[in-house]
Image 1 (tube, rainbow, N blue to C red):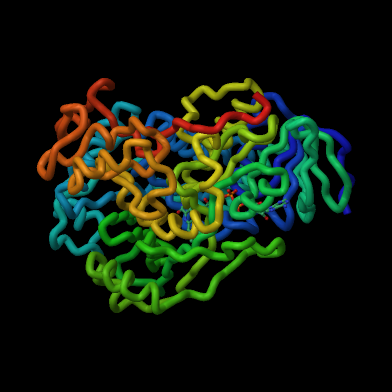
Image 2: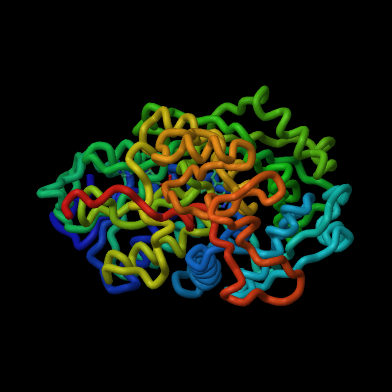
Length: 504
Ligand SMILES: Cc1cc2nc3c(=O)[nH]c(=O)nc-3n(C[C@H](O)[C@H](O)[C@H](O)COP(=O)(O)OP(=O)(O)OC[C@H]3O[C@@H](n4cnc5c(N)ncnc54)[C@H](O)[C@@H]3O)c2cc1C
């Protein structure tokens, strides 16, 4: 039993990487009267089993790039500040291209990321094989090499930030679930736990895959769903050492890094499987799910063609754990639209470790100053429509979420193929009749989104007389200029929302 304070400036619900990072940054910005309430133990949700990749591929908007950079820098300096190591290891990152479209997308992303200050280079298949000999170069066109990326230990990252937060006065209370949230006149006023009530005008929901059901208690829509997420661990293998780079191959939906002298081999497979769609059990801690070999074997076989050494490697374990994903692949970070003072820091789409530092920093800025230093529209809960929290919508869309994030999202004109037709433009039938083959409606919420303006120029007519890609031609060498670069991911482009804050 803990002695709970009766009031606090802010209460954070959840002691995973996001909740702890938010508390750390609130304290760093001067709010030290902060309480973190963790249902069980720190990291016992999803954080404990993350693979720890710290890879910048796909962080291709100004905001995401900032989030990544802040996390990377923080994880490297936390030990000096707190005495607790994060386990960050700068082994570099290779992002493979095996199709022309991927190579083109990677070159655009590389140019944009260079503009944002990231060190990235295109390298040849032979150079890839030099750096990571276990990869097959058959059909490999190139790769983007990022020497400053690496990997970390997610539990250590969280504990290091917790130590930093405690040093500044934050109270972190484990074994204390939040049972209810107090709302008065559409404004949050505190939380209720079995050990007492804390009055607070700022409450942060950072409860990972539990966030949807906690938000629903007070009518806050939190569109996310826990999905199965897998990695294999092999026995030690010849030639595998700690300095091997992290490798990601979007076309085989797989990533690889060294672990204990063997390989950690992870997947973002197409047609993923939701976990506990009705409600995540309140007592699910350190969850390990039984692997679905029948579903996963074809994906494994496909991925092993790019990494043939895996075919003969000794298997140590096939791990499956739940992680929450959102319908558009974007995070949910910012004040809720329904309840003032109630903030979301959740829906991390398997990028929560590499983004944790930056997400917590921006959320803390919003809470303390009313505004963040970066453009938050692409992350704001306000971009989502309420139907996106409905279970049957999530179950239709979310099986595509893993592969969309890992593979499709960074390709020009990427579109979701599932959960379509929920909302239509008044002129839908007229458009569809006019451009039946080439036209694809955007799945987002922006009726004037880029897809309306940029149908495939080779396969049909376009609207408004515009054809072709809105992207400039790719270049391999020179950094892009700011005006010549449009690398915002789909979710960054679709921040328009029909809903309005209830209290407005
Ligand atoms: C197999 C796998 C591999 C991954 N690999 C990577 C990777 O390489 N890189 C990367 O960046 N990300 C990776 N991730 C994703 C990453 O682990 C998550 O994005 C991140 O841990 C999410 O953190 P969180 O704080 O949002 O959630 P969580 O870690 O789940 O924290 C939420 C906390 O809230 C608590 N809680 C819930 N309900 C209540 C309540 N009522 N009251 C109080 N507390 C409550 C829970 O106990 C939990 O501790 C991976 C995920 C998986 C599953």
